Length: 118
Image 1 (cartoon, rainbow, N blue to C red):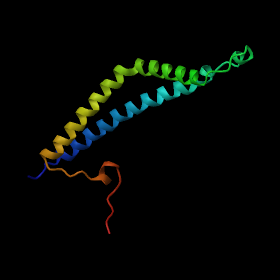
Image 2: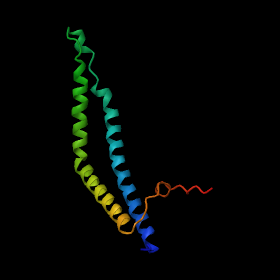
Image 3: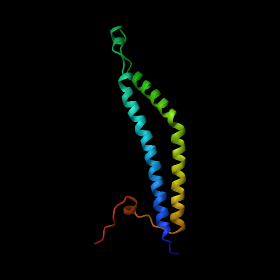
Image 4: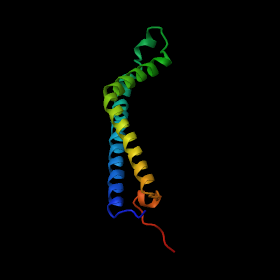
């Protein structure tokens, strides 16, 4: 079956929409990482505890970091879940279109590179 001229256009639009969804997920991850990086100085142990005769607890920092990370992730969890489901649907739709019209996945085409000809 010969693919119609519109099929490559449809496939490229679907792949671009998928890339956009992935970029949104990556953006959320970067925002959470930046937020946690900014919080690190506040999470570091206070030096006053050792002067009172108590050594600093090495696990306390990790515990505070993990709880803040869980809270930051929980705030965005609904958005992360929705984008993850959308990404899975897009992957299935792209695969189905490729199978249906026997479109080969070309790594050079999907990365925007021109194929090498010798």
